[in-house]
Image 1 (tube, rainbow, N blue to C red):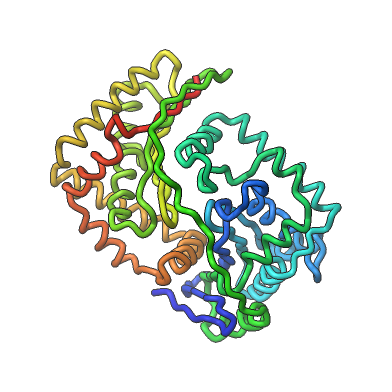
Image 2: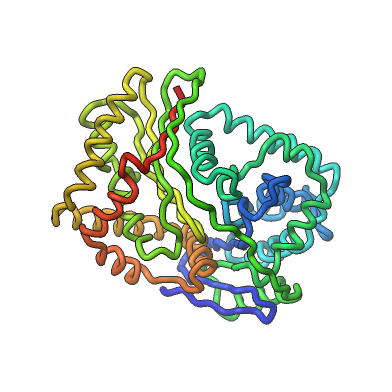
Amino acid sequence: MDTCQFTLPNGLRVVYRQSQSNVVYCGLTVNAGARDEPLAEHGMAHFVEHMLFKGTKKYSAHFINNRLENVGGELNAFTSKEETVVHATILENDFGKALELMADMAFNPTFPPKEFEKEKLVVLDEINACKDNPAEQIFDDFEERLFAQTPVGRSILGSEQSLTSMAPQQLHHFVTQHYHPQNMILSVVGKISTKRIEELSSKYFGAFEAQSRILNRTTPGPCAPFRVSQPRNTYQAHCMLGNRAYSLYHPKRVAMSLFANYLGGPASNSLLSTLLREKHGLVYTAEANYSPYADCGAFSIYFGTDKEKVQKCHDIISAAFKKLRETPLEGRVLQRIKKQLIGQLAIATDNAESQMISQAKSLLVFDKVETPEQIKEKINAVTAVELQEIAEEMLHPDRLSVLIYT
């Protein structure tokens, strides 16, 4: 069934898709993330996300933590570079409890000082855990260099220095700036009637006042390619190479997604997995990632290998890149990778939680939710010439940046 949507008088947009399951997935997406923080408040969006669970004008942290869990549901949240999402999974009869709780968390947080100091320690542990995992840390380090001296390049978690210096009033200021009904999407997937969704969303979200908010995001300037090797006390070498890529609104975005999936998507027969793992046995994991943002994007390739095999991996990858830049994909290969991506997306969107999150993102970014058929048409419209052009732009050795943990 296609998605339906409406807008409350205060500007909050609601999008929903009915399903036959008694389990309901709902989420509140806020158009504010890590790139919306001042430098001195690095990690603010993520810390706010944590602190939303620590008390409101109506509920204590203990109540918030148990409200949905006591009836078998789940309440969680995550922060990205450009969004914060609070989401719940609940049985149909408890749908109203979830909406009431999420509305109170988003619009009435109190950030109690005692919880504030405790949660700082939790996030510091999260930061240190990332540092202990080079396969995770290298992604943050790479984007920090790729978007040097810009908010887009800073890690979502923040730093020990910025986190330690934060005060509750700064969190209140961030929420006052960004947590407005017009800056949010409420997304629902479940066996809930249209009338009930309209009644409950109006009941729990409709009373909050509309407030205008202008996004103050600066597009990152040009970045010179870099080649950096950092000594690390690790058994393996961890390697990333990549480039600036297209934004969410770029006409080549869909083709870029197809290209990245062909190079190193989740399938075991991706180009890099086939070459580096299946053919030569050099790596356990090789992946390609494309992260489009509102006004820019990042493309990267990651693999881990024995330190003495790094150069061989680079030689194999360079030869594959050269071929992609010089020779268009054969028609049968192009059709295969299109079918593969279409199939992967169909399977992914069969997950109701994934549907709930993706339809909110789509409405937030494009002000519409595309049907699977429309997405399929865009993928099928991609040509071999487009992919060759992307290969030339993204994979030329003079433009590629490289980061290696040795």
